[in-house]
Amino acid sequence: MPASPIRKLSPLADAAKGRGVHVFHLNIGQPDLPTPTAAIEAIRHIDRTVLEYSPSAGNRSYREKLVKYYAKYRINLTVDDIIVTSGGSEAVLFAFLSCLNPGDEIIVPEPAYANYMAFAISAGAVIRTIASTIEEGFALPKVEKFEELINERTKAILICNPNNPTGYLYTRREMNQIRDLVERYDLFLFSDEVYREFIYTGSPYISACHLEGIANNVVLIDSVSKRYSECGLRIGALITKNKEVRGAVMKFCQARLSPPLIGQIAAEASLDAPEEYYRETYDEYVERRKCLIDGLNRIPGVYSPIPMGAFYTVAKLPVDDADKFCAWCLSDFSYEGQTVFMAPASGFYTTPGSGINQVRIAYVLKKEDLVRALFILKKALEAYPGRVD
Image 1 (tube, rainbow, N blue to C red):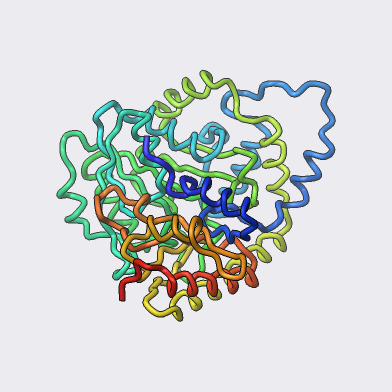
Image 2: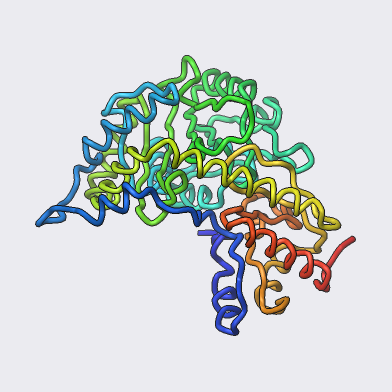
């Protein structure tokens, strides 16, 4: 199992805090914006004498409300199409375990969310990556590049849209290209769409569920963690029209008994959050994105493309090794008692040597903290002994 690039430096961060250093956490997608009041109130006023198992597929009342939620995005589902999971992570794992045999291959554009590799290893599957580049803004590679990797063991394509870690948003043309590949080679399309609320361009959100002719091939992954700042609830969803896949997934769901009861109560209540909540959250991320990207690109030697979705960016730094630099920031550096914690981007690639001078930064801090963190990063780059100009 690979170490998480997001969390593997946490002991160094803890040690820095122990020395009295203030650490700006840019490493993890843990929003600091408030969870909907409706969710907090639902937990506060739970009126039960027993906290029982929920159904293995999740509470029906929650799934019924999810049908209405997805309909707002032109994703037309029935209650039976939705299986509630313990976070989006379990949805990915169960999708792999249900659709893939040991040795089967998944094509994934990289950089990609690091835990996909861990889930593939758990399922005995093999991830074959196809490189997108920071110079091209992490756009989808050409179709020919995908076809070069397809063989008799290829069973699926996995995308994250909008993307973690790059913030890239796939265009309609790119999604249609993926659709054609899935149909031509009869592949599964695993589509992680947990950041659909956070799209900062006039381009439309194209879900894998919008693609015509491949409904039985699509497995959509979702989660409440990001859109409602509910990472700790561990409530996600696996969505598919494919009855055979749902039947296999349900065996794994029954083996783990049930998704979290309290989490479902809060997640169901969150669906009643007013439009004002979504609007204020969205507007805040727009401002943070501008603050971060403008600030990064003003630092000498630093480059970040403009992310069109989610709340991450991958930035190129003038350093010899971003893993060493990120560790050094925590273990050897502080400026006026402060330092920064970033995720080395190499952990989001599987190709050796890729992302060696890149970091993933999450803009989940308020703007004043982002401004200060950017200043500390600038000072760190000036002091780092492995700087490369």
